[in-house]
Image 1: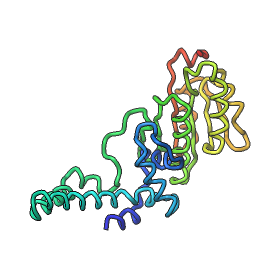
Image 2: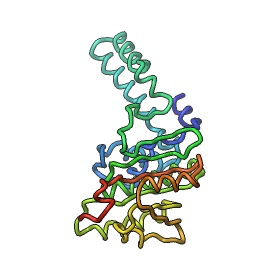
Image 3: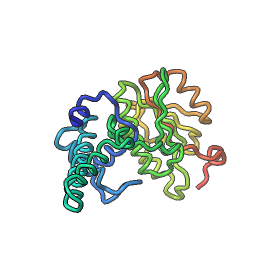
Image 4: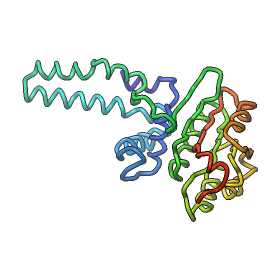
Length: 249
């Protein structure tokens, strides 16, 4: 029944689910904040059934049922049939598990400014990734942005001042990031463009609408002038004022 509910569910992916799906595109021994199992499981499910919301979530209830069966067998062997039944029923219907049944997603609150999803009625979906400051995280966030924008049928809008503390790699990293986001963004607003010229130079104006802004405040005003409730806006990094004023290596 739970598998059927997953397949029939109209719910879009949460930001963390989309990030796990992105991790599953490349099998590794570990990821930004998780060991490899969750990404490997999603990789297997989407390889068999294709990329969709239900296939990404499919194996969650399967693993839950397997865990319940294992608990029943262990409890029955150790303490008898009644203990096995009591144990598995407690596991299946306990309140904190029941709250997770609808979405099959972790129910802890999102960490603020770490690809935090902010969804208000009548407004574009905001992905607040202000505390992310590395190349891999930047790329992951751009892919999540594209995935969610496609789900909503809207535009993917990136607002960023770039990445800090790259030293001599500053221009090379920003050049790679600029090339990368061409495939994932419809609009890019670069904050303090003089600091990230390599990023802007790598953007392809045939694929992406490119704008620049002196500050996040100005960028937010610009986004508000054209973004619709179907769009997704990624705020990628929020650098200290000193880094907005000048390039610091």
